[in-house]
Image (cartoon, rainbow, N blue to C red; front, side, top):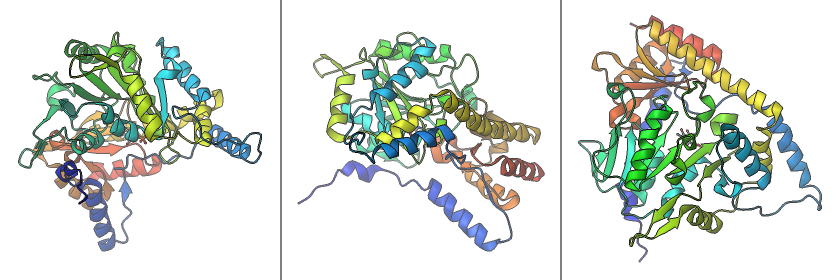
Length: 410
Ligand code: PLP
């Protein structure tokens, strides 16, 4: 008899995007003359930078000839890309990362999800709340969550750390000892950031408690404020306690092309039950060599092109476009009297709803009265109730129009 991994039965159905799609479809059917503007999406919309496309075409052509044909590549990624990452993302900020500490992959989602393979089922997991759902669900699948408490909207063995307007979106250290800590900055969904000093508190906690920080920096490219760290390794001692996840998805429009990387410094150790120190870099390398066959050559050449002078310029233009949209949303909503967070070092704007308005009620009102679609905050965790996410990933024209309509709402 084939037995299943029963942890999967503990997963809660994510109704968020399915429900949004259903509600929008119903509204459109009933109001075919209304132009609905979608500012709920977390996906990029701008064309891929020309420098990237050129590199992809050239790489594809190499497959035409026997001399330049490529088969399986290194599971960890080609050195030409790992060296660019090392120099541009780390060395340029005074951070020493070796190429063999960089693992190129097909997405930060996969990396954040797969990393749980190398950790014991007995680890205590902490997530900030609201949160990118992948951290939670992958720990549910691997048996670290315990049972789901419907009333609280929480799993019994997961430590939820609220990040709300109450604490100015700076999560407080957990009262109980935790082993695995997920931090995502700039944050999805709140668009907020931590300063170097605030992040250092977490690094110090992890050092003291022999915990690990799983630091998701997928939105790093959106940072402009000086004191916001681009990498957790800007914080002293972080190499001993943190894995960093980066992605080309939001940086360079790679959500469809697929390329990302994880950094696992050799100083970073985990422990056996008997307390023996083990290099996590080695475990991850073994895991990847067994379960992953690398990112396609064409894709890695595309990612490499982001680091060329032309590529950097074109990527920046796209990022600035989204950031400008986020600014328009933030400014417009503030003028309309809303309290708004994020939207500065991030494409995400996090709206605090007035007078105890529920996230889904605001969704319905916004759709009906302004014909604008956003994402209810409660879909990202219990502490997201009463909040709403809008994104700068639409077109500028639609963003301006959407905000004008919201301003006219009663
Ligand atoms: N991490 C965060 C916080 C995200 O919001 C997303 C995508 O929305 C990802 C990771 C996924 O990145 P990738 O496209 O590289 O899998």
